[in-house]
Length: 138
Ligand code: TYD
Image 1 (cartoon, rainbow, N blue to C red):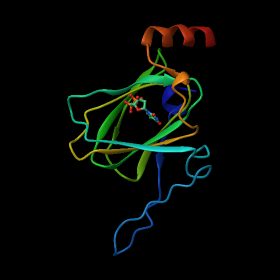
Image 2 (image 1 turned 90 degrees about the vertical axis):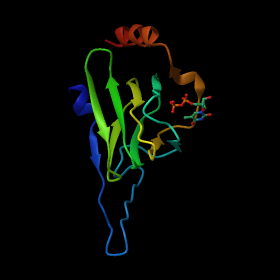
Image 3 (image 1 turned 45 degrees about the vertical axis):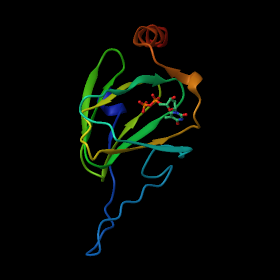
């Protein structure tokens, strides 16, 4: 499978009507894991790069519920960029994938769903270490 096939774009159903939009996300259904943690990033802008890590265990889904941002996704070999610009789309990021989030619009609210509770020990924050770890997996 290519990196893009593994890190697939998720399209959520809009259940909105004349009163406004409604998007539902259920763990294990519209996203491929049970949700253990939710966090959101806002107040970033076009000058910052966030993320810059991979995770040994956690899987994520990233959704810009407001505004826009970009995510650069790589496994150390392939790379692609996703533009998150609609509340009805997300990108699934499996474990052991490196991600950088950047180009935040000033109104960006980036919602992140995670498959595990926070554990700083499972974060790989050094890109050279990441490449070494990935070589061991290959
Ligand atoms: P960081 O991983 O740098 O955020 P991002 O990947 O979004 O750029 O996290 C910033 C700080 O918040 C860092 O000290 C770790 C802490 N943190 C938690 O305590 N729990 C969490 O679930 C997350 C995502 C971060």
